[in-house]
Image 1: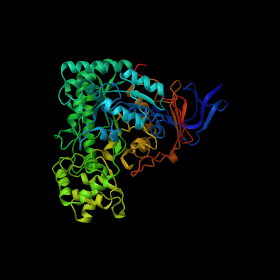
Image 2: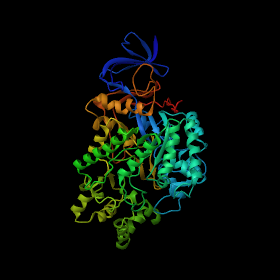
Image 3: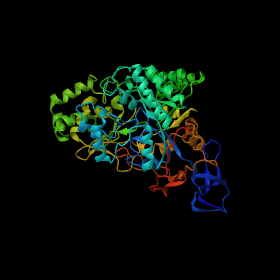
Image 4: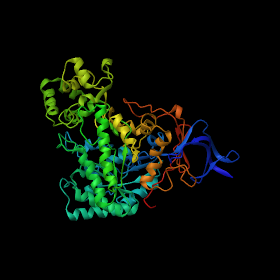
Length: 582
């Protein structure tokens, strides 16, 4: 009997958590149809997996790939790290429903700067008609849909490389209903309209609704509104994915809140509505100072998990995903990008540098930072901010590898002064800002929990992807997680048993999502399969320019189609939109 693909002699880790075993796997018509000794069988394509791992494809449980998959349909940044399915539409952001307002997802920041009337804080809710021409001109993205169903049909019409589990974003729905008048609680009539949009999306195949409660407009939603959204999704068997309240609105110095209360709010919504809840990119629910105290980080992670487990023991269906890193989905690799508003107001980088050489201008910025009016660098929010901003590339080699506090001690200068001195010395200096709320020890603690899964919290890109200033230099780049999060998980954050490590990234994710035919290497399952050369597995993580693929992912099959062959992307568009109950 002839097959489409046979993978021979591999060490099979089937995604169930059971012990690995040596076997062959055959694929026909996009399905795993035979597992066993196939030495006498033939196939159109034979892969020799001797000495390599054969696993299910990875499921990215929290992705923003839906924002860019129509621009980068080949989704190389996903497939090259072994991701075969993304769960996207997260943090309240989804491309539909689309009417008068577009809620930006960050990749369009360059366009927002051109149309926004604000100087220092961009408005992320813009009139669709004001941005559509820019999206077409810069990215080739035509906004030719309105409903959620039309958006999914558009995705299927174009084709995608990776399977897509869609969520509908409450932020986009709220902006559609309330527009610019969103900085308040919604009325009953407005909530009713929002529910209509959620229902349309669920009927079209959404798996649930997501919220972003540190961003406009979701941050202004009260408990009653959020519970109505979760309940509406739950009525269709969908779940509630929450970027829970952590920071407050990221402008100036937000009102201090207890992070654990944001987690409890999400769990309470699950308790009161009966909907399944997913805590997005979980981090510790407590403020720690100093934040780099490993003992305290681990204790805070354990206490956070106790709160979640208490609710689970009361019957709440709760799970969570974790970014296996100490940074989030985006990066500002150049220190100067923190001051993009002032650069615009100055008329360019050169003039901005001239301005900060002036004592009074610089002192004005220092005063703004020290009094908490500038969110990105804010000693009132993060007293140890200077320990989490490290130089990775500079003309002055003695700074490399040192954080801002250490450089300040070298220079005998306060940290807030140091950042301007560094910019004057080298406007192109590159820094790495790590997440003070998520250290390696706490991430590892979370990942060892039975309800943990893995995510990138990032977009889908190729190697050219970036946001650029008008002078062509980088402004933002995709974070390293966009390219290597899952390889980093395998190599730095995995469990004691490789079988358990793979289970969390595959079978466990499929179980939480209710996917019946993915996540495992079993006969009858969809052929989302990886061949991994574990000895060569490397992240190739680059903090100066993250746009580099990892090593060691040799083959990637998606629905039986060859997305990666001999460690190179093939350009196959074999992904599917996975509709709920579809």
